[in-house]
Length: 119
Length: 114
Image (cartoon, rainbow over all chains, first blue to last red; front, side, top):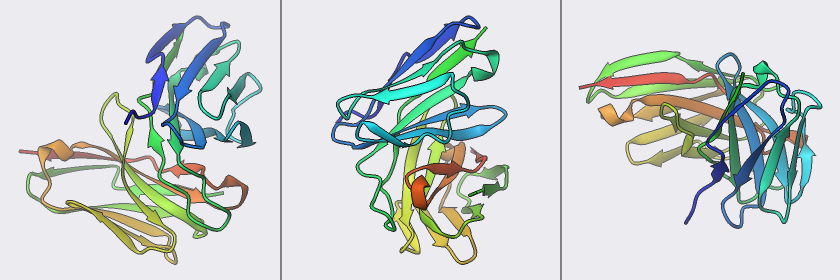
């Protein structure tokens, strides 16, 4: 079956512009995650969705970042008024369930990422 | 706050050697620990997932162990091959409202030379 897909694979934008990054999770996966990978910070968690709700947004670095998920499937990460420090690879992952409280969660499968460059 | 550390940062070995990659975490109340590999310019490929109730998992030439009490996990690669060259990342899932959220180490860059 198809894995996690992300689009675009590369995005170059000018400082101050808004960008939208898209993630298509594995079909049937209820949980969806966004991470960011940059040279200085390694891999950082941004936000987690269970269905269409986001119980954990703790990793979003500023209010310029937002994300939504519709129909329990596709998710969009939006960055407004992009800054040069937003340049990174944005990775999306999905899992079958997050796991009930106190029980281990399922394996996360990652997409290929979107490389964002802000000039 | 969970913190994950991997040592060594880089490792170069000749083909055929058995090797161990180390991962340590500060919060022993983890739900699971996952090992990934990342090839240059690519996303992450999941290798092994160890649930908190498990001690180890095996897949082919890979074996991962988990010791929650000491806050450590190891990834053992047997009979290494040049195709194993990649960055290996471990990540821990913590509890409470953060379950599902992976906290990553900085990775070990592995080079296996023929």
